[in-house]
Each structure stands twice: as C-alpha cells, then as structure tokens.
Length: 363
Image (cartoon, rainbow, N blue to C red; front, side, top):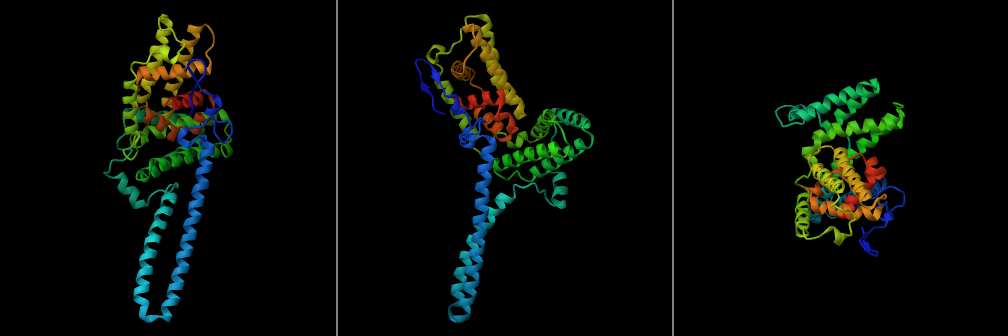
C-alpha cells in the first residue's frame, strides 16, 4: 500500500484498497493484493498445476523404470550397480512426489479411519473434552438457531460436526492449509443451503455467521497465532515500533480531531477501547465487529470536530493515530486470524470489509 503526501497529512488512493484483478472487491496483502474470491481461484490454479506436474513426474519415473529394466536384460554384468543407482534416484524423486501430492490431497474433507476417530475420542485432549462455558453457550445457541430450519438445519449441523472432526486430524497441516479447508467448508455449505435448502440470501448470511461462530469458538486455541507461524514475532515487532513512535502527535499526522472537545475525547477513548477489545474475542466476525465499532467512533469524532462528514483522507490518519495511541495487543495475529478464518464475503464488500482493509493498510 503506497502512501503519499498531498498538501498535508496522509492520502491513500481508494482504488489501492481494491483487488488487483479489478473485480471490485477489497484486496488484502495476505492474498497478494487479490480479494478472497480471486485469490482462491489463483491458488487452485497453482495447486492443479502442481498436481499435474507431480503426475507427469510419476509417469516419467515409470518410463525410466521400464527402460532401466529393459537395459538390465542386455547387460547382466552391470545390472546390480545400474539398478541400485536408479532405485536410489527413483526413491528420492518418488518420495518428493508423494509428499507433495499428499500435501494437497490431505486438505480434503476426509476424516480419519474409524479406529483413529475412536482413539481421538478417548483420553486424548479433543475439542469436545476441552469445552468451556462459552463453548457450551455457543453450542446451545447454534442448535436452537438451526431448529428453525428443520431438515436443512439437521443437515447443516451434521456437516459442521463432520468438519470439526476432520479438522481435528489436520492440525499438522500448515495454517494456510487449515485456512483453505475452512474457506472451502464455508463455500460448500453456502452453496448447498442456497441450492438445496432454497434459503433466501439474507438468511444464508445469518446461517454462515452462526456456523463461523460455532466452529471458530472450538478451533480458536489451535489456529490463533500458531507456533508454526511468525505471527507472534510480527506482533512484538509492531508493538516495539509503536512504542518507539510515542512522540508522534495528532498534528504531525494532520489528524482532524480536537480532543479538547469532551464529546470528541470520549469518541477517541471508545475507539481505542474497541481496537484493544478485539484481542479478547474468539470469533473472527466478533473481532471484525470491534474494528467496525472503532472506525465508526473515529468517523463520529471527525464529524463533530469538523462539523461535516469525514472523508477517506480524514479517516486513515486518524485510524493510524488510534492504533499508535492504543497499541492494541497482538495486532498482526488478529489481522491474520480474521483474514484466514472469517467468512470471506464480509472482507470483500461492505463497511466491515472497508474498515478492515484500511486497518491492514496501516501496517
């Protein structure tokens, strides 16, 4: 995201917030500037290309094996040495091929064998065993919500439980692959509900919100700021950088907010509280809601100060100021968690998507 000075303050071209493919949705640096939809399309193209290359490698190895066998028939004396070297090469390349193919196909919705499932449900620390009060409450709310959809609700509940069970066996996957599994699940459920359940779009959105709340309440402790990523390292770097900028004043950023006005000062405090509170939420949508509330307080503070509606050029420097003043905990981890596991439709359009994209650009 390129920021440039225009007269005073910080200016950002709003077109830079959009997907670089030109689809009109909001982009995200985590998706290389694409929106969620375009990024998934690019990702699947790359994955299919890799799978094709792996199969071509397998066919080449098969041909080499047949050629080596034919050659060995005519040169019995050198057979042992030649075949040994070939076997070593074949084993190395085949191992790489199998590992790569397994990596992509393991992200499917398969569940473990019956024996594996039984072992996981036994004494191991499973999702069901480590439920909290919040998890129980969310479960009851989810079940009650689905009752209004009758058979469709039963099917949704069944698919959701199967997804959680499958994710239990995929904790060794990278966080990107777990994210991909979750996004696939969101997409498949939404399409199934719309086509088979004949549910209107506005109700589909509510269903997806409840599904996200239900599954992410359970997956949170496994997928938020995992040790396999550098999220925590980036969090510490951002906090250190913010502390080093403690001397920056609103005037330096040309922030159009007058905190001497009591009502404006109150809005600033509320905005800081909201952005800090984001870290206490477990559901991506709830974290996103904190960003939206924070942003609305910012717009109100600017409106009161200027006695006119705020512009995009007013909003961004003020958001940066709020982040500097609040120094929200685990900012990078929260942004990554939302990016990876939030229902993508919320990040691509609407006010939630706009505010989130602006927050990402501040980093």
